[in-house]
Length: 342
Image (cartoon, rainbow, N blue to C red; front, side):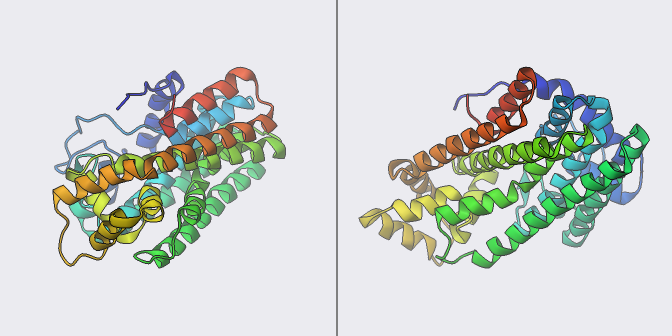
């Protein structure tokens, strides 16, 4: 698999975002904040500094780049960037708990480490901190009107994600979902990507036209990034990737799986159906065959084409913002990186 270099725009802004997150979370020594620091990748289960690098702060960087594109400074917009990363963490914690995912990025998920009840508590804490970060914009001379719009932008996007998750949970394990419906659901989840871009434009006092254009850009390119994540989950069958693939198959919660269910015919479809309604656990051999089947039936190609289409539509939507060329290039480069394209 080709490794895609991280954009300089991401590498240059991550330290600023990380510092703001630590200002919001790390200074408080309560047990709750210790859980938050664990999820954010700064400490291990024993509370010792984590040796692994922190995750890429793509959402926060989208906020900073969008703010800079309309004339604000990164320093002025960084509370908004941190707010988006904390909002993302809120959804991650709850989703990992709901899905029963025991391991994430090679270490125990927060709920597995701290317990389900405390996992819920930690997720809610992330969301509260996100709102406090947005309110901190007042300290940086952002007007009350823009702060109100910023809060509404993040809350509306979060509600849209929650409504999307409700529909997805209702459809789990049924044959009602289709690839097309799942793409629409992914667009709902990508509302926080759209909010990240719109938030930056609001902080920078961009016009409604610019805010809307960047929101559309974020939602479409965010959809491409989420499809890429689902596709990566079926590339391997061991460790956390194995558990992800089993869950995706059982609950029909992945575009590659839904595309496979639609495209498989004859003996392939019979084998797939038998696997989906099995009584016992899946063997590694069966999972390997499923991964091969996704390639041979065209399910993977369908996902790749979807990624390209969503990415291109997002880039087209950004044109309505009429951003300076260098600012547009930085946003496009980050979107391509997140979508796993060149």
